[in-house]
Length: 237
Image (cartoon, rainbow, N blue to C red):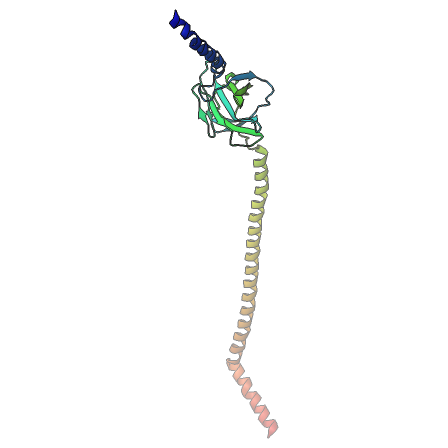
C-alpha cells in the first residue's frame, strides 16, 4: 500500500502531461512535417488558381495570400480515394500524408505562389486541393474546387485568304506574260522593218553604182568620150 501511495504523484504528473500533449498530437494531421496545436477551417482565405495548358499537361498556378506572420503553407492534392495526384514546383518538404510543406520563415511577401501540374486527361473536378496557412502552431485550412480546362483547338486558316492570294497573283502573271509577248513582237517587227529598209537602201546604192560603172565601161561611152575630147581640142586651137 505504501508503495502504491508513493507512485500516485508520479502517475498524476504523467496523466497531466498526456492530457496536455493530446490536443497537439490529434491536431497534427499533416504527416510529421510540423506539429500543429489547432487547425481551423476557413472559407475566406481568398485562394485563387489559374490554369495554363501546355502540350499534354495543364499547370495550375496556386496563389495564397500571406503576411509576415505566416511561417509555412501546406498543400495537398488528392483524389476521391485519397491518393495523391499531380506534381508541385519549388522547394518544399514532402510529408508522410502526401502533402507538401513550404517554409516561409525567411521570406517576406504578400502572396505565395506555386505550380501544380497534372495531365490534361485528369478529371480535376474530382480532386480535393487542400491549403493550410500556418501561423506559429495554428493553421487555417481551406479546400479549393478545381475547374476542368480543355486544350483549345488550333485555329484553321480561313479559305478567303487563299482565294484572295490566287486572285491577286494570277493577273500579275498574265500581265507579265502579255507584256513580254508584246515587247518581243514589237522588237521583232522593228528589227524586221529596220533590216528591210537597210537592205533596200543598200541595194539601191549598189545598183546605181553598178549602173554607172557599167555605163562608163561600155563602147558607146568610149566613143562619146573621144568625141568630147575632139570637140574641146577644136575649140581651143
